[in-house]
Image 1: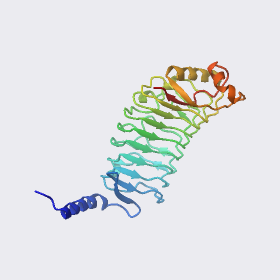
Image 2 (image 1 turned 120 degrees about the vertical axis):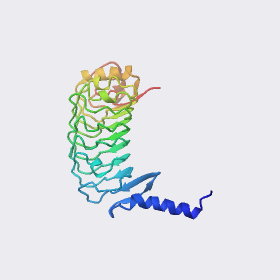
Image 3 (image 1 turned 180 degrees about the vertical axis):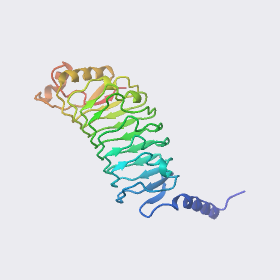
Image 4 (image 1 turned 90 degrees about the horizontal axis):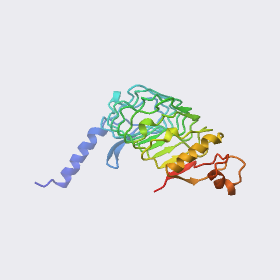
Length: 268
């Protein structure tokens, strides 16, 4: 039996109405790339709005949320979110259980906030998370000990432009099976041992440029690791008095140069 074209349109309209009927005026709820999406950005919201439990993509960027409490999303029925955008929300504190029960989430953007600390349990339960953006926050260190829960599908970890001075040896222990890119550009790292990056099975890009490197003996060990892991440098930065023309040679000879593999990519 064939379905009449006009009937199909009616049915689609009914389905659309069911999940978008609860959409508040300050949000735009619509299908985007086949996903039920709610765009609630830049609306001066101080709390997460109540929306349909069917929402898959949620954009709350640019709202002064300040903090994320326990069960911030699951407690109001938003347990099916796959992509969550929370950039530039003035967030300073994140409860360790803020993202509990978001097992379908694949992308989380927390960039451009004021987060100083994230408990190791923060993303527990986000087992499908693939992309985690934490750039432009106020993180001071990664650790001590293990800094992230097991995230078996995580591919991208962006920690760029924070205030990170220290990374514990076991900081990324639970991320070693899947992560491809770690971005630590523009932090406050003065020295760095290779231990935090040992054990990665899929790592292809390690970005470390624009840090105030100072302890060259540690950087020598990191250089050796980069070579052994078949990571090649694709950019070079001079951070001391060694001339640009002699920079690469100096690094290869293990001299006191801080510009070693600061942007690296695995060779094929």
